[in-house]
Amino acid sequence: MTIFKSLLNLFLQSNCPLCQRSTPSELCQYCNQQIQSCHLKKPSYLWQQPLPVFAWGIYGGSLKRAIAVMKYENHPEIGSFLGRYLGESWLLNSVETNQKPVIIPIPLHSQKLKERGYNQAALIAKGFCQITGCQLQLNGLERIKNTKAQFGVSASEREKNLAAAFSLGTDFRRRQPEAPVLLVDDIYTTGATAKSAVYTLNQSNISVLGLAAVATTAKDRSIKSL
Image (cartoon, rainbow, N blue to C red; front, side, top):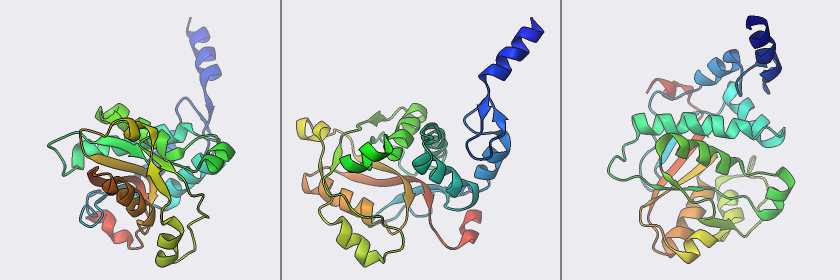
């Protein structure tokens, strides 16, 4: 029986998508520890107007690698994994305790979604909701403008690229949410994407708490000690 169980465990294991070590989980223990080293002690340090942001970790090291592998190397399972981490941190550190928000992932344009096969923000949002019990509305927003890649462009160029990028999705065109919305995305940089999404929702009198992101591109790594 022990031999059979050992063989079964060996069969069920797969390779870690970040380092190719054999692992029974989404990521191996070593890479998981490396990602944990990117975790912010105070994820709510950016939770302030005009765009409150809750960020799980610093965009660097193994966390940056995990997000890239998820998006560009066809490993959607990492999205749910990171979403669960984000959800756990939200329950422990969120300043919003009165009402559970409705979760809306930042959508991809249909062309980009077809190319990638999945929306990483939606996968993160699903993992987040598994932990928090929040309601998920996958189609609260629709991306109607296929914007170019935002890395390497200035903040003003980002905002110009993302102007009128979103419209209400089918979920909210049928019925508006009864609770405030929390947007979910993989990375928070200048906030241009989230601000455009917030503007679209606010135009329809939908209240937005802010954005929850797996990582922020904050340059000062000393904020990890906050």
